[in-house]
Length: 179
Image 1 (cartoon, one colour):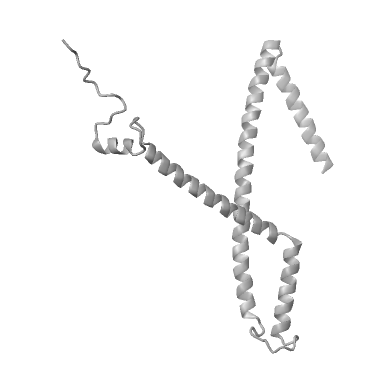
Image 2 (tube, one colour; image 1 turned 60 degrees about the horizontal axis):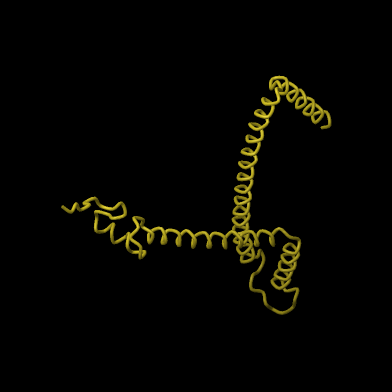
């Protein structure tokens, strides 16, 4: 008598749609690799775009925060005003006093520059938050290790903490006195 195994292998789906999705990556292994692949590709594309946007914002913020930027704007404003009040003698007065076009252009530039600065500051803040989290984890790790090592060496943690509190109070007092 031949006994046939009627159990369904773990990687075979009972739903035809699931079987189709499972086989779409060319491998019927129980995972939906094609879905993962699409999600990973989309994430990668978003990350690439976000990285390019952030780099652009950082570069613009770096340029806008330089003296070269100030000098270029001083020259630009000087030339604009000279042309439009007739000092250049060329008759190119396209934005008469009170220079409404110049005001609009400078206002739009200020809006965009402020946005780029905020984007860069948000990135810096996110990096600082990450560093802070890593510092906290390392400090906690060091403290746990210190307590365990101290315990193994027979050091009284209450005595050590008392000394630390006194040292911190003295340091704060000296900082307050120096102000």
